[in-house]
Length: 187
Ligand code: GAR
Image 1 (cartoon, rainbow, N blue to C red):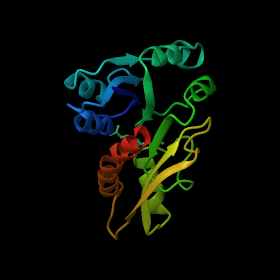
Image 2 (image 1 turned 120 degrees about the vertical axis):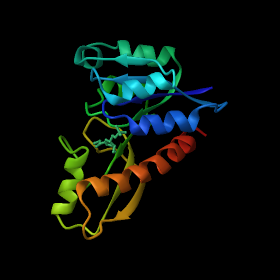
Image 3 (image 1 turned 90 degrees about the vertical axis):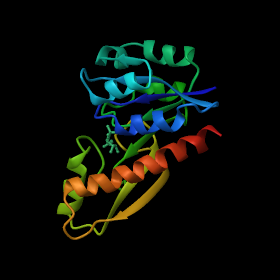
Image 4 (image 1 turned 135 degrees about the vertical axis):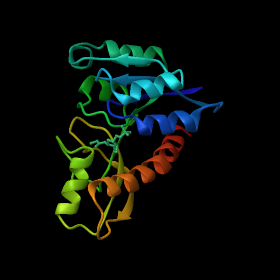
């Protein structure tokens, strides 16, 4: 079994999508959800799919090697960030080289970086008058939204699009492509 850990702290719809995609899959399993926010929507979705949730604080992530050790003990092959807003520390990047990926709801390097998440990204894209937005799946390094790009997919920003309508289009792209990329990286 190839085990993945999903780090998520938001509504968790990408995690839910992956959990459904891999439910009953004989070779890939979402084995753990790591979350830094009490009450985050992702926790309920993890419960629905019987996936254990580890709630962490900054001390666990930045002040010790405990989480890295746990991920190793669980034989995690890939760490998948899906709406996880804290930087990944160097000890984890070193322990999982090219084995940590993130998804960002825009075409990086534009509209990324600290504080750029969720509808803030879509508001900025619309305010800049861009004809296209999209998704970026990339390896994670020690900066926000910065590692080597694995996949980008575009979507048109249409006249009349609001942050919410653009978010819906982008979520649809995320649900289609994130599991496909995970499959590819695990194969
Ligand atoms: C996703 O759209 C993801 O691209 C974004 O957070 C959302 C999480 O949604 N990530 C970032 O903005 C990273 N900078 P979800 O909780 O419904 O999966």
